[in-house]
Length: 498
Image 1 (cartoon, rainbow, N blue to C red):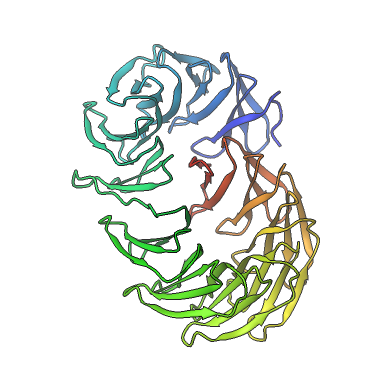
Image 2 (cartoon, rainbow, N blue to C red; image 1 turned 60 degrees about the vertical axis):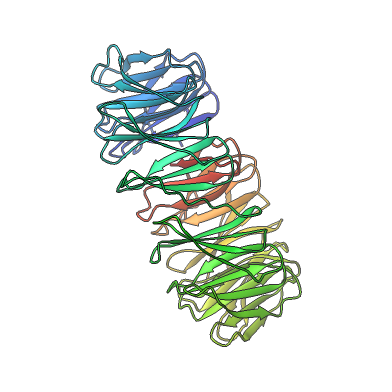
């Protein structure tokens, strides 16, 4: 535990080689910590208000901090002091170093993106001003090559800039609300933007033409799944439909209709040739992705179906309902193979073990149950939570299962014995989301009103990090494939990488 700040920690960032962490908080200080020992190497004092974000330069020799006092300060880790104070930009909403560390981009409330020459650390001179936005800039990002910058602002626009000339290459319009976040794809040929208008848009900029994918239903979007093999996105909504989109061309492929009420969950099969959906209309539907034809309507539940998932082999789906049951369905025949009963209240989630030989279910009755897929027998009932369970998840190797509850705790369970190995306490409100790292040695969690994302060690149960910065609760979290980044999204469209 890194302790020393006198008020809440607002932001943290790793050094490029991962051996140090910089933190900023409401006590107006910036601190640099040794990851191995936990020692505080530097305490930088100079800001007159709380620090909102911090960042390391790519070379690791500079730290930048952004404060509520309107200034950005550059701190030298060799000198141990402030190298430069950058002010006069209005309130700075976002800052980012270029990939080579030569420049820094600031997005500010005066509607300009400002590039700052970091080689001139004594003056912090503004080498170029990119003007065009009509209002504050919420997010800026460099391309991987560092030759372009994308910005998103309060004026609902996304703009693409040439770093060398400062010329605006493209202005991408279409959002009907402020643009909250922008980012480049790894190759730099696509830009993604999220907005207050409840849509995510993908822009193709490789040929200088803006093509967009606007995930926009007649109602609230309740689920989103990506099919990498098909370059396709599927979305579902409370307008009772499922829509398929081509991520390359931006073309709306088709709309799948048939459900008569809110569609809660969608899932692609492992082969990505089938799509399954569940709805409050008490049914599960199996769709052919290529043709859009509904292959089976799986009826049998007596109340709304909340969750559905394919088995790892893709030959079966499991559905969980408010009628307190789990049903296992054969996707070829559409027949119900097992009705799993035992829960005393409605269910919220169902998931398969990585091997596909077991199903776990949980819900409002404060318990989770582990079922044998072959026989339908309940192998273990996991008890201990004092309020309903929101999420359950198997570890990548299938030996452990994690549960997240409204009682503010996570619990880690041994799958073979059904015993609770760790009760994890730390969140100040109900835990809404959990996700294992790819190796299974860590688990990330998000909560309601404490607006925090926490990282836990799955072997010891200890809290490794507590990430703060969201203004509203995080409703989704995900690990990068390599496990070195965590992405989190809040209920107002904030997206953060940790």
